[in-house]
Length: 440
Image (cartoon, rainbow, N blue to C red; front, side, top):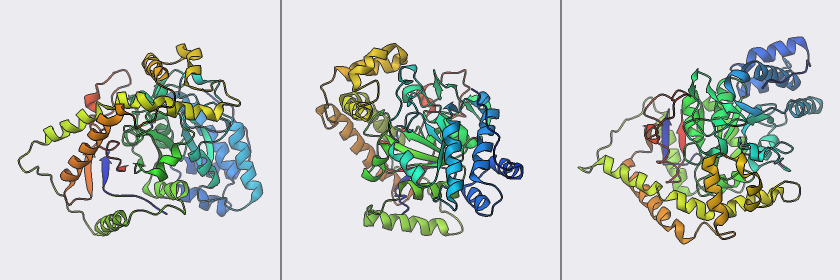
């Protein structure tokens, strides 16, 4: 079931030796498809016998080998596991699901069984996942193949670039001098460059939407509710109250196919009012043209209203740190039997392996009471601010269904430049309302 809920914010937006496998004709057919591959093209090619899953994954790995060195889109690529999965699908025959044999790049803060979850930091390079994260499990169940762990802003600490100690400087495929934004930039760069067909990122303050706008992709930061929050199980937390998993694709059709395969649940029942709003918006968009309404604020200053939004966001760090220990402990318990870290305090053993900005956050987190919940008094100003943001956004929207805003006021910055936060416009608008956002 597709659950695109309204109102929404519309944001405009190493080298691996690879095996020779499969037939020559099949590999040629797969290679010709991959630069601009679609999910439907992959399914029809395999169904019609033009190439096998093994052909496709083999050529995908060759493409990564050819281009990743200049992009730094991946931190690691598990070619043996990917090829084994492809051969298994061919031996089973038929299509295994809506994402059959679709190569997927997974941000390196989401668990993939048997692969380290590093978040780009040397301190976590030994933290091998014992099980798949919820989103990876859904992707595999739909037939997708994890091709590698994507580069990211180290410890998710930047939205303006995706640079990590383990992955290097991720470049924008459209202009390698420029940033692919962050913190899920590696996933976006991989999809845009044809190194994967689908990307998985995480979004706390625009970390999926930003890279999509920088790389010309389609993605949605989902609605903040229990259904979508369930997908963050097995993801290293940044700010639990706003962390969500997002998918990244090159086309609307690919995105909708992946969305239905990964997010759909039989038990989910959307609010009737939201269904009505969604259907109304769909009817309007189906018409020949859209009616554009420019906002008028009835004599009030729009800048002052937006200033309230940014003021509300300033209360987040204290709230984030007050409940980070619980969410971090919950995540590390997944590794307690086999991993090197049982709880947040154990991370002190590898303290020097984290960037300085994360060291400060970790120190404060460890000093907090054990398992303090996010509903603590420290979060009261944040909760009030978030409510104010939602009220302001409803007033600005009026009768409109969609608010179209640029993600950033400028082109993605050169990777050699450290921009100011003022270069980003939209991240504060969406996460603090809980509404979904769409990049086109």
